[in-house]
Length: 222
Length: 222
DNA sequence: TCGTCAAATATACACTGTATATATATCGAC
DNA sequence: GTCGATATATATACAGTGTATATTTGACGA
Image: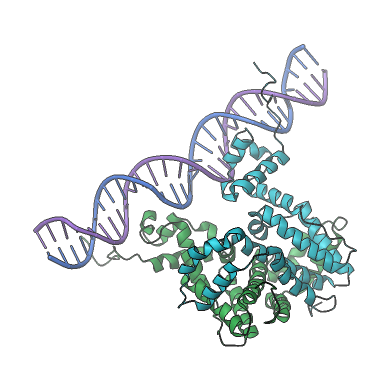
């Protein structure tokens, strides 16, 4: 007796519901907890049902990643390039902080999602409209993205939460022999006693790059 | 009848042999091909034997990573800091090109291997001896490493081999709609027609950072 | 009312890391 | 030389993974 009391099942699964549930699992339980069976369970469905909407797990991950990229602030192609690129970089970092599993996958996966392409197009367009050659724009974007990915991934991997730096001192410092690694020991101690402000430190490196960039320099090649 | 013709077995397995074999598999067949059973087979041994020398797979990966890090050129703590750090960064990139699986793991794993600690200590020491404060040295190293990891990971993930750029043109360009993504289309075409020199491009971004760094600037914090 | 067709399911397979229990080879002490 | 003791290799097993294949089910157009 099929009644409407339950969920009246059938035909309720969609690709976007799958992606949504997958993102939720990855964000709350970590990417390693995202298995097809767990995802299916969260959707009240069998694992194999998912394969009616998604080619395989790799495909699912690509869809998730493009969804993440859609949170990047799209540069205005006619706006001031430094500010546009700085804002985009900061929004990338913020996005990665919300989806800590994403950068590793994003940098080691080929994605042609619509949002990813739009982001690349707008970023390059902003530079090109500012007078950068195609090659120079590519180099500039590459340098900025390298910093954004590299910095955020290091930040996400840092073993201690900013709020418990001091508490970690007694725990980690003894492992760093003062004799064998004097500088590392000292730096760790200084670091733990200081404040941590990820935005400022990220912007510091970003600023080094942006300051050095200009439409005319960069590659000697055609 | 035990004879010495074969291998006279027993007691031949060592941690370094395991690491060596694991590195070989990861470098030739990719990190995803490295399973405990395959590794054991390469060593003419059972999977569980490995666990007498290694706590678990994560531990094995840490040992492999520290081995990779040992290839980084150690900065001379009293040498000229810009040149020292530039050389270290380039050697990191070269090392990653030989071990394409390494950077992703290295940046997403906490490692306290001796080589990793020595590298961190020497790098910080070089900056500190050049007049950087502990905090400034940390920020500088962070900016340089961000670029090194980020750039090399993007480079390793680039879908086309430098030698076959032109051949890839017909293959990839059609997927990038000239109407929807004009700048990306143009940049891709330009990129494919140009030469690729990873060293030069890497050094370009690195140079931006090194040019901006100085012992006195950087963090306002203590 | 009946195909038709898409979507959900059931089952199965090869493969993963590794816990547990067992066998065996080597070495120090007598 | 003989005998534990100890370290190391093995055998077996289990829960979990992605997914190929075959089957069932439900909704819709004729």
